[in-house]
Length: 118
Image 1 (spheres, rainbow, N blue to C red):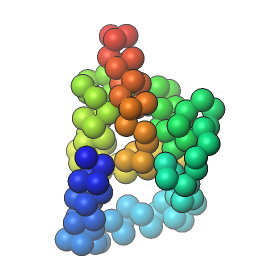
Image 2 (cartoon, rainbow, N blue to C red; image 1 turned 45 degrees about the horizontal axis):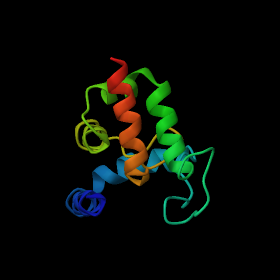
Image 3 (spheres, one colour; image 1 turned 180 degrees about the vertical axis):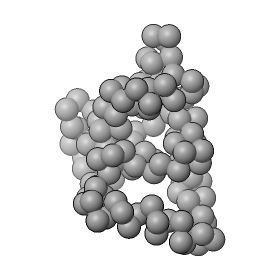
């Protein structure tokens, strides 16, 4: 599924490059782009999570009211990912962690936990 999402985003980049440039350029100027450290780059755990990206995404979802409210209305992490990327146009946390690089199983648990609290 992640491959499908990435392919779709690549297609959007080809069809609408000016939009991607408008989003990425300010982030690069703010130095908010995450270095290339994601699921496939780091085999070790990070603060009990699969990796830094998963930890960072979970941290933002649990501690930012806007993200939390979006997550509580989602049935799973793929639904949240769709809301963030397609509906809102956000591809990364404010720290630069790519929403699509987070570990799906762990993030599904986060979404389920949030849904159970409400």
